[in-house]
Length: 91
Image (cartoon, helix red, strand yellow):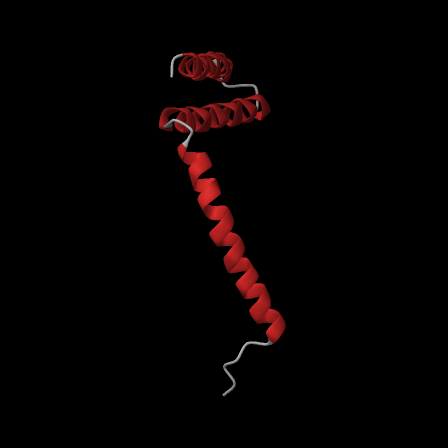
């Protein structure tokens, strides 16, 4: 059984490991500089925008509940954005 890697594959493996070793710490440091609440607030904002898009595409006849949900989602997006801006201004 031949367990040696072909030279090209070995080089690619070493280069990939090197790239991970060089880039991963930079990504982690960049991520750690963002305050935790901002990461979660941004994730919430993304989810709200996704919900808004789904509601907009939903069939209209929901007894007014879809429209209300769209209004509440719009307000939630605005409040979340305001919270993100507040946190930026008051670190």
